[in-house]
Each structure stands twice: as C-alpha cells, then as structure tokens.
Image 1 (cartoon, helix red, strand yellow):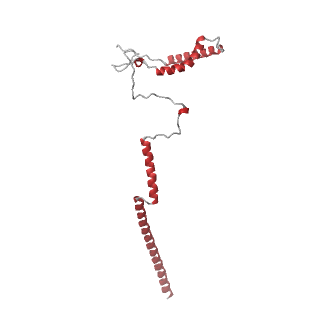
Image 2 (image 1 turned 120 degrees about the vertical axis):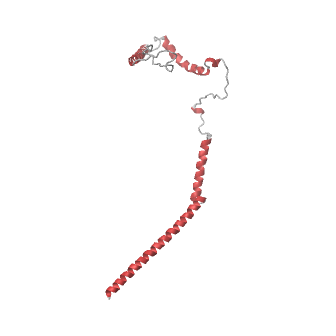
Image 3 (image 1 turned 90 degrees about the horizontal axis):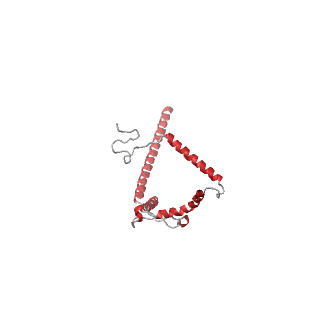
Length: 188
C-alpha cells in the first residue's frame, strides 16, 4: 500500500519536510518522567554528601560561580544581535528600545497626560453635570417647558377636584332634601 502506520499524512498537507511522524506512547512518557525524577534525587543526594563544597564536584562549584556571572551575560546577550543583525547596522526610527524603570524612578505624583478619549469622556461628564444643575434650577428650556406643563396639570387637577367637591355637595343636598320630603310626607 505504501503508507506506513507511523505517517498520517495524506497528500501534501501534513508532516514536516517529508519526515514520518513519531508518536510517543504514554508508557514511554511515564518512563522518561521517572528517569528525570531519579536523576534529580541522585543529584540532591550527591549535593548533601559533599556538604562543605571542598570535597564536592568541581563542576558544581563552577556552576554556582557561573550562576552569578550568568546574570551579567544575559544582559550582554540581549545587547548582542543575533545572526545577520550583528553584521548589518540598521537604524529603525520606529523601533522603541524598552527601558525598564526601577520603582524608585517612577513618578506617581506627577500629572498624567490623558488620552483623547479619556479627556472627551471627562468633558462629557462635566457637561452633563452642569446641565443637570441648570435643569434642577429651572434655567434650561426643557426645565421651563416641564414647569409650564406641571402648572397646567395642577390647574386641571384643582378644577377637577373643585368640580368633584361641588358635585358631592350637590348630591348631599339632593339626598338631604329628598329625606326632608319623605319625612314631611310621612308626617302628613
């Protein structure tokens, strides 16, 4: 058939440069993890046995010394350019070199420059607050219209209440006069 069980490529879309895929079984992964743990334990035991450092491995002593120097080397490595960059001198005006500031150098008390959106949002909130103050004071056109409408509604309600009161009085008078008529007719 020509297709091995290791390769799952069909056509040209799979795989990397024609190599067959290799899968690691879960048993192999477990075995690798066990081996790494065993190695770490052995190194710890050796480190405990050679406690004073003079009788220990000279390579380990050198590693501890190198760890201090490695911090300096990392800074140098970041400054060095990789590959062809070291040969070609390029100045990109758009490239911003990242400078890290220490906590003591940060200026938290100084005035911050706001972005355009932040400034517009603050101005919008202030304008809204000014409008609400004017509105509550009754100085805006909308507030004047609202107050006029409220005055009209009050008058209508007062008139309706007055009419209702008059109708109630008229009804009471009618019932009282009706009772008097009945009492007069009964007295006869």
